[in-house]
Length: 127
Image 1 (tube, rainbow, N blue to C red):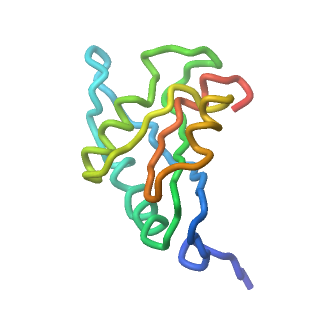
Image 2: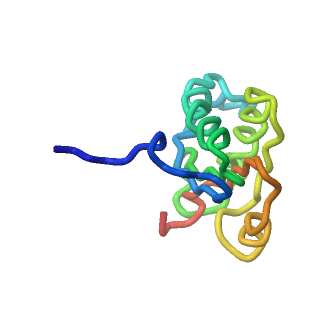
């Protein structure tokens, strides 16, 4: 039998949650504007559930495009973070990297209910 836990089974009370999401959204090649929000909208029920179950914060990580291990503003997740905040009608903090001391400091002791979006994981070849 497949006795696997889901987010419905986990006690998130007071915990900081790191969640991998698929925010590899289509964008207008000229303007960079997000042309379809389906993947963002698809993640929102899980993000909301975790927060409703008492998570202190949710840190979202994703990739966007194929920057091939290079930091390229064309592939930044900042517009995705902005759109998520707009769609959820909640503040979303975009962090300009996905590793390092600044990210660790920002995520260490957040306000309850905080949502963070890390910068594109594929800015690093190790992803």
